[in-house]
Length: 256
Image (cartoon, rainbow, N blue to C red; front, side):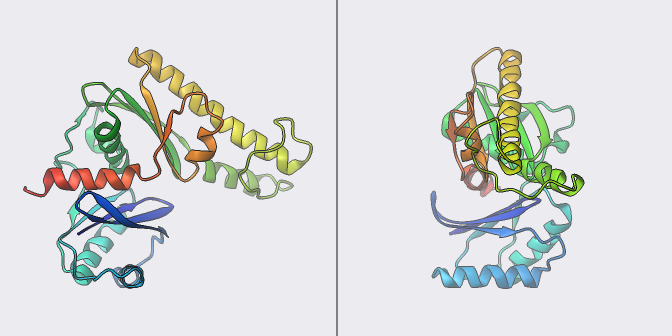
């Protein structure tokens, strides 16, 4: 078995694989001040609850966009799992040619998504990830990572609206009865939901024109299903894209 860890700004996703089968997946809150002992105990409890032996892992792969947590999870893997972790970063074999001006600037999660999407769906592709930031990444037919766009995520945008507009409440992100809201909550839901749908669709259309092809659009992330239900461009929702991408990268590098 291997353990895959995707460390994001808001959530950490942990997945247990046996061969290519994802046996179990957990989502944890990202606590930037968390220690190796705290994360290790949490992971041990989760594994034990679901019947996994904490000593039963042949490998651990980690991708992180939170630099301070990388040494924490590396220590956790060594101490609690007895495994030297494999970290996704520069020099890792991904099978993708990165066409960014500075490839080191591309977040590990974006590369992992590109690897997973290309492996599963083939190119050309646009991957939309609804995380702390909303990212759109373009992958060519021959497997080149062309670049992408980064926008403020839905969660931080709605939180900013609540914090900086004294009379606006926090609202559940759900589909309203009408785009012309009849109360404050529905008006906010309409603006947020359809505003982000419009943002994604416009960015995808512009990417299609620059790529000169109707690339397939894959969405992932916590709110992907809601946005995709209203989007005219998103064709597939794959909520396990990133964690499965880590498995692909592990397989491509385990002999090295």
